[in-house]
Length: 128
View 1 (cartoon, rainbow, N blue to C red):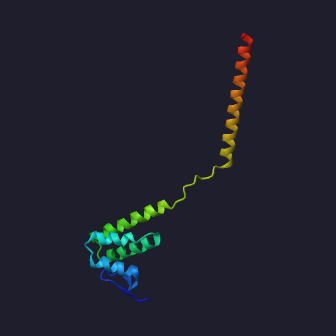
View 2: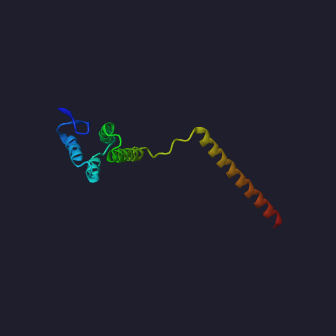
């Protein structure tokens, strides 16, 4: 695998789809659509990290480059969304103490309702 540096100073693998895609971005640097198409190839955190590294390398050479800043921010946004989307959505297990409290509170409530019903029946029965 031959490696070189592109015109922005970023490490680039000569050949391969990723290197060719980055070369197209460099050739049309001012065209935001070429940058978005490049980022559209990034379907996981690994490829987003590689893209972020490319833009970070450009920024190390040209710190004020508006396009590199904008696309670096886009990479961070996409990585954040991807990371949040992969978080598990299950409720954390309740501690045993909470489960016991809920059970005892339910039992106490049921007993209170039963006692109140009994008293009401006795009271109504005494009036007849």
